Image (cartoon, rainbow, N blue to C red):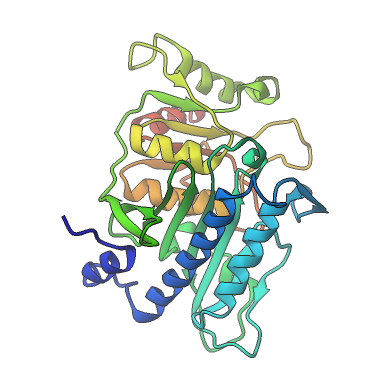
Length: 333
């Protein structure tokens, strides 16, 4: 059977995908190349001096892993030269990343988390790159923060690369969710998971239960529901938690289940939780909705939230539709 690459797949479906323009294809090509370079470094991380911390902290106040910093620099370097972006935003950078005047620009905006789950790097657990793509609101003026602070529903594409036992790319342009696996022998991402659909109800819940004492009563009720044999399934859900959003989300997308990162009182500086709306919650929400699932912050649809700042944080409940609906029901009491 002939294998289909990401770009071939995009071109085949271009009539149904208004984003499949030549400029969008170039954007995706450059992003894929950056992911291949990052994947290569991840795979040999134990052999070279890329593990551990740089000694710096990012805008979130977190220590920057060496591989985090490398992935961030690779993506910025490649995408600044793509000729199709007007700006970028990274989890690792406090402000908008502008395109230097010496490079061509376009109307697309790329928001990304260069290496999600980086706390797991040293123990060889799956990590990933998350990306979100918008089009600027007004192409006749200089790009501003308001061009970036768009609702997630306005994304034109979103996806992630997961670096695990194999390297995969999962993405959507609004025409289904499709997964591609990197074949290192030919250096191409080949279609391996066409038209992914998340099961309507799952068997897995993913949450860091060590934060139990920092949660409010509604959140505790939600988690207790999934642990209880008296839930709608009639038996407890299995707890599976890796601590890497990409890895936990990817497993639940394929098998069914719910990932939860609620707000907590552990850190007064982060009253809305840990995950970032623009570079983590929004792209995953777009993916899960096009796969038949849901994503909420407890009450609101993630894709309807109007962002107020670049590094805004939100609680996240994402996964199988019936499971997320149950969360909304409990929070709505």
